[in-house]
Image (tube, rainbow, N blue to C red; front, top):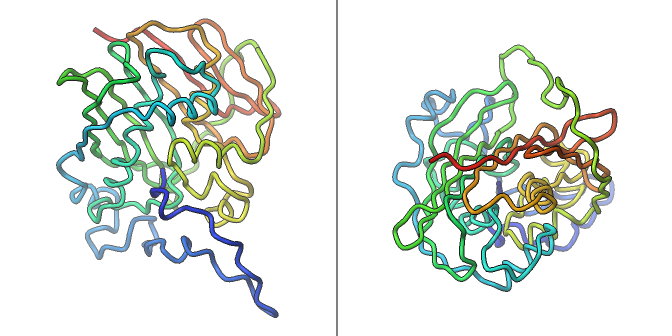
Length: 304
């Protein structure tokens, strides 16, 4: 997750200082101070995730949004969906809600640093077809925080209504990485089951993060350039989790108008990079070298 476009528009490269290090980019100076446990510096009450939860943003952020058909078409091209369909992809309401998600996470009540948050999972339920020419009522709220072996994880709940009827909802988790006292757990990217049958090998260009960021407005610096990614502990830019999910869904047969998509982001997909797309039935995954799992997902009928 990241700030809106205003904060992440790339500026001219910083000029090296003779005899010293290069100045930090402007967005690095804007990052809010953090306490040792990775939470924003808010005094004693924010020293643990449990205490921070007491000050989570309260009422949902709500807004009516009409789909921009040109932006939708650009999104579909970047993700591999066919363009011009009557209904928009199941992943697109996430993009419509993104400005509201930024607003929630940028509020003083949100206790985690927004810059560098890592998307760890998504669950999206579409209850009917989503007209591309519709006007949707979007609401976003933070459901809670949870301890994670690599930091603190926030759960964000989003709902989309059409003429007052709930037609789409999602739960997404985002990780603020920081040092914890928890014992290291098993690696998330090691497959414990038989890999799905390989379907294709995909080679992702180094500008995928920038291209998806342009159509989704998600310009988190971990996705943009090697320099900006290194500021947050990544050797190279990593692909957006939601782009990898959308890219996989674009390859699957249509799942009907009522469906649920669940996906877990096991390990970052570094850019540029090569992955194996694998699928069987309603399940899909992305694997890297040595069978390293990057993404696992499934599509199911939506619960009644």
